[in-house]
Image (tube, rainbow, N blue to C red; front, side, top):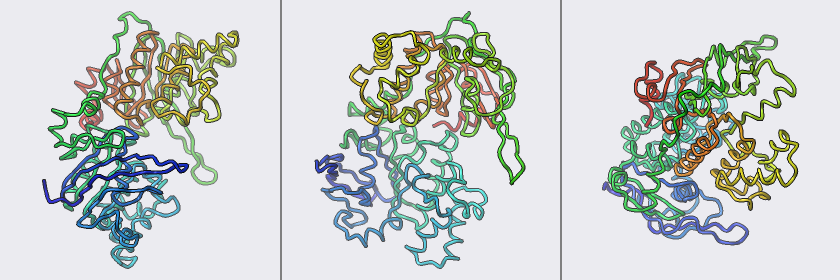
Length: 527
């Protein structure tokens, strides 16, 4: 291994919420050589991010023990003044959520300038020129204009590039990247990963990657450390770890990658939902009096049979979610064209007729914490649809349906009086699915239901959905940018780009013989 730049020896981290000490990192030891790419992987709550923040002593109200030696200095024993000088200059960090990490009140250029002026003492004019060079180097188009932009005026990929530019402003020896591509599309993920590889080689810096994305690790890191419940259970070269993992937890992580387990629908299954010439038009204000139309979806046509899963893929802004909402008549846009559900035109219905039809279609949203009311118990959340659509059920019958729905998703009746904040992300997604299946719908729209979940939890949710589909013959419309999930779940696929359906076909045809250049680019970008 190269000469160690960072040496972590029996690091432990404790917090004391309410005065009760809780140890979240336990006796972690590893080294990172100069110019090395090292990854820490594990599920949420395993201690990855706390360990990374400890390297710069960034955890709030934490008690440390052990030793963290960076370039010959013990970080845990350094005075605050020396730490401030080290942070951003010798070691820098890219945080997971750029919108939270960037200050919304300052332009991108001002925020990067601050680090350069503080650590290198450059004048504002020289620092501003360096900012433009950094933004250009990280692949941001029109860097002079983007330097004057505020965070909300940039896309997710551009904000992540701006954070990388900020971290590299003083050419650090160590770059810590905490889940740098979690919420990005597959093509943007690949671009960011390629960029980090280029910059690491150019600057000769060491990189510590924190992630739960095992495919990314395989394509990026030279060595990998696996964390479980605050402990480092395995460290090995990347190829060795993926081919011959020694720890049972590592083997379980590797086995958690999406596996296909869906049944093939009957060849003569009737069409449940179909759309023709579907157009979704929004208007936005341009100036004081002028309103400009924008077509988020243009001339879409599709059909889905009973018991089948249609996968909709594409980058952010391609119109995937708008199309899905239009299929359920939940889109705020002006919609033209036809959507027929079970032979009935959704857009020609109203009042009680439409309300009765809604019982047969449900939706599971991307973020379960945002879609579950924090003021309602789980029992009320799951039973809300039953109270609306089945007023004939008495209290005992309704409770029995609620308990049955929870049991189908692997939860017991002891959760009925608890609230959403008391559950993990995977459990909340199970509750959202239980709410949907309690009505026994014929169609279930799934909008990025696993994008924020760890690999093992993701696989559990996918297996759950596959089992529910087989038991109840439900039809799924599955929206995602994760091609591995689509490969595991879909029978047919449509590919969207800028509001248009550029390709459609069976899963095997689209994935094995893509006809459109954009589909080919999406597939080649998948790690």
